[in-house]
Length: 205
Length: 169
Image (cartoon, rainbow over all chains, first blue to last red; front, top):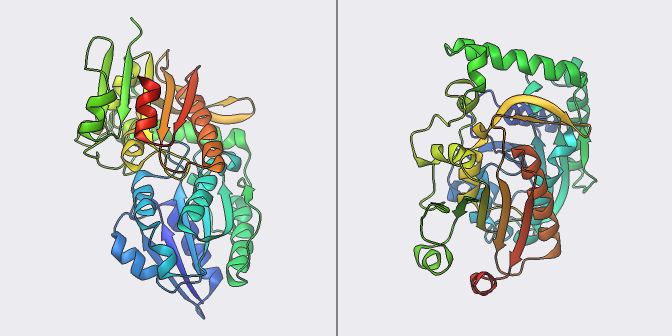
């Protein structure tokens, strides 16, 4: 099979979307052609060429203002009329991660990806909504707080390799919400101090 | 005076037909030519709080939001969401809110930087808008209002620029 994994984070390294795709790539295994592309670094023609003849496209991105990050949205808008011709029978999967705790806050962005499929004339595979995406690097995928992420990606890899469509899979990390909230607050203040700001300056107008 | 900030992705010619002149009441922010996209650095939260660190006009929008009573977003509807050009401006404007979290009706959201948030009004246009795209956009405007702290929001759909022009006349 040919499977294209499209990283929709604007960041080149250390993105939750990238960590998720690397873990998915491991689960798909080396017997398949499985390549990671990057929407922020590759233009429309490169992406169209990469997707050519593929069986599955998996788009992984962070939730931005309740939707798709603008650079990825631009790419999807540009390729919507050509992609079905270049990869007939392509199944599209999407993994959206957000900074909030609840995975369900990603469902509107998953709807947008389904609407993209409708406009592009492509079949929808499955949506995955990842809560507290910023934690993706906190532990190896499949272990500790990232246990649920591992299970979700096991299931997704199975669906991709089986050419299956499935219901959305929405989940949170194996970590309580109040601790996530508290550690995020500590983290913002630490970052401020690293930048030479006092914590109360984060509230500046 | 109830001050309005209009963010739109219309061509110059279309804008001339329906967008009011800049005045004490109206501030106009064209989404074209497109501003640079958000690079995900969180600088607007932890380096220059309230303002995007990138050096183009896209960094002005968050502060403009705080100075107006209503934000009117005129956008081509793309996959049930906003156009890439309009979205680029909003992605750059999360400095309007704080990085800290609060729980609202059992869900995590951001806390507010400013006491008051502008009302949101989305006017979305495009050919062959279908019911699923409308439903997506309804969810989007509600979520955007909640996350920007807006108390009031509205949404309208137009199948073409001309339909929108007649409705606004």
